[in-house]
Length: 349
Length: 253
Image 1 (cartoon, rainbow over the protein chains, first blue to last red):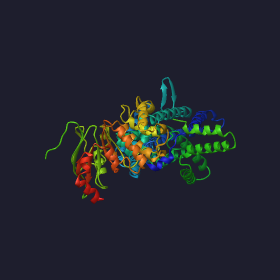
Image 2: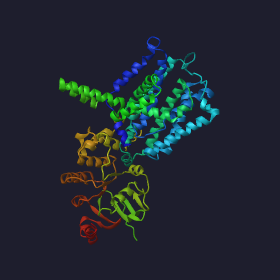
Image 3: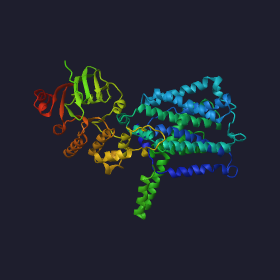
Image 4: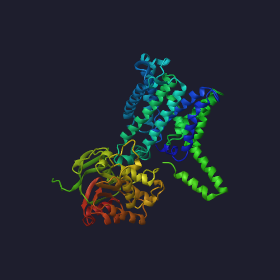
């Protein structure tokens, strides 16, 4: 997808992300001192959506697959996790296992049919599949509770008895989520720098040539789609523990929100979408306290980004930093600063 | 009719036909390529040369006929499956990875032959042998000093060299070059001719080329196509004295 290329970019911004994570890890310390416990829950929500946006980046920022149906996996993971906890066993690990395996299988099947076609046709097929799951969740009342959603999902525990912690405790759940996000982030970094990941990036750049080098392109795309679907499902599973599961997790609004988050943060960086998710939720929270038309304002902000900073917040940061450095360089110490700018260009990876 | 069959033929094309609607782009074509041989495919525009390449490399499926590579039929296989057997091509129009570095362009091509080419959690930059081979290949195609450049920043001539380099990086047994000198200045054409001469030693090559001096300098044999059919085949001397060839070129253009 040619138009996606402008959204990519790698250098810089990474340290900001580490600072962001570190600051977020300190969030629980301020509860009841600086702010209410609502913000602990809010931080957890940011992390979960960040994880979901990261899953989108894997296929959109690194493989060039634009899916309009990521909600399918988020919702499936949420339902599978919640139903496991309600009906099967009160075990977070079993719920995680079932969510991941189910999302992996479903992603493989959706990928098998959708990846045969490209571009807009692929996008529409993924959207259609997601809507099918939405309908199922809506109609299959005995399993999903229909439009009422799933009520009374128990809070699982982690640890070995008698040393257990309940994930119903917002502090425990926050750190649990943070650990999952950091783990998945570093696994994803590993993935995109693996031989497999490099082929994905080559596919994004020129699919035909990859095929003629002897790589089965469809198989590679499908595997990326499966990895993305499983991470999306993991995010959904965590969301089920944080919040309430009803068919809206499968609705296409969910897909659009996560796509906006990923683009807002900056595709092709893995950490950009996590920052994008935080920025999106923060803006929503801020704007919705003033107006019910928060989507309108957020939409305008999004339009501004797509036109003027297609690499999202990460790109905006890089450009601003370069301009400031250049400005400073033109007034003093030109040689030294040119070197810094240069290093920044070649840093990372 | 007796079919010619030699033991050392790496590629055998038999009664190959491809039609687009009523147009026969390739019509009942047959020829063989020996290992180590460089055969040039020439003919006026629209003669079916690129269609022939697309059939051999799997971009198109034949309507009828057979293509055998190293004894096995490859007709109608997917491009990646054919490439995996050791058949690589360069493209008439640039077909690179424009946003990747020159090094990464070649590296990902070299990786295609590696056992761990689709491994998920090893480091791509640590694959045994891949870095070394990539450097070696950049040396061969004369692009070592541009390794860190984005490939789209290279000059046109250098991009064409990289195009050949990508095909070469998969360690093919048969190399198909589709107009490697198209759009080049005389100097670049000369350099590319030398490059092809260097890399083709011991390799079977099928070459589509319009510059007749390039063909004469490189080809062991020449296949002349016109309206999808073979009208002549033989050594450069035989072909250039063929009356049908002269007619096709003078009458057909």
